[in-house]
Length: 456
Image 1: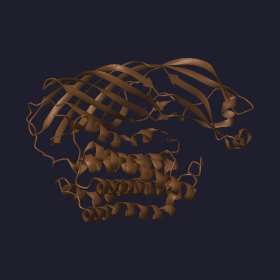
Image 2 (image 1 turned 135 degrees about the horizontal axis):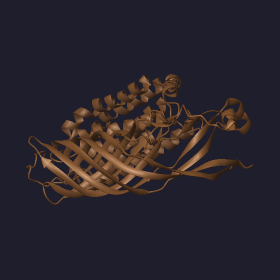
Image 3 (image 1 turned 90 degrees about the vertical axis):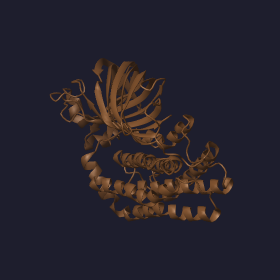
Image 4 (image 1 turned 120 degrees about the vertical axis):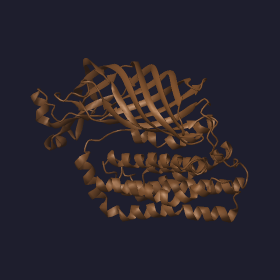
């Protein structure tokens, strides 16, 4: 596990080393020349070369690194990496739609992105087919390189070029942090080796550099926005914004966090996209789309059915989570030196995630059933009304960028329909029958950091 985090930190260090100085110089408008673009491309290729080299160097150590994962997170399963890989790219278009200009015109930005995506897809698909490396979970032979990681770092480099190198370096830092989290997630989910994600990161950055080099050839000096003014606006302005929050989620009810029970929720994570339009400097209206996920620990659970205890070592419950869509009022109080306090009180709908409670079969029964695990229970929550409230402290880092520390409280109560496995037919199809319905409160807090794009 330590090595996994060391490698992930190395990814960020390599990126910051290679791109940090460039972010300072590229904030000034300079019409690109062919030789200058080629020189910039060569300098920017250092990061991919370092990542490719790290991938090769880690090849013989990948099994050992995986053993650390299996020791500390043997049952980790979560889909956050399926969604987080797209977040930096979506932010570019979200900021443009909100009127926050990036380094290039929307047309030139889109052309650069399309060439980057095409290059990334071609490289990943070609290498996967040629390498034919088995995934660590044994599910297929297309592990190397990691497509999720390549896509996430391509999107991260895209956001960094348009906003990190133009408006504020924090855009780039946030982008590469999300990309690194995706890479870590691919290893935690046992879908990729460390060498896969290192190579994927290199491919993603290189693909973006190629996409922008092609766009430079096509557009030359056209489609470049004016140098960005980083002056702060007066505190009297209306602080409309769009933002992204990432934090730690902790349950506050015994339904999910009961020390005396057999099934408990561990600390999870929360993500949130939010935004508000302020019609007054202190009052606005907006909304949030949030997601919270909690790993479930049930090592102490024991079935009374002797047939179950005979064939299974223990059970595993997939992580549980809830999605929220809320609307309501937002409040802001500007302070001195670019600080501000904000709060909200929102309500709307929430939808819980479907999941399974899985039996891990004993070794002697794996051969009999030709299965390693069996989804014994299936649960499906019904949508319900929900509410949330939050408080944050924000510091303006530039005219249109703020960094915030926040705390949110979410309240919802879901009715779960639970089915149990009653039969496996001759074709191997699982047949489920209704068991009961369970009501669970998902009240929890999420605290962490966020970034906001101010729409002055």
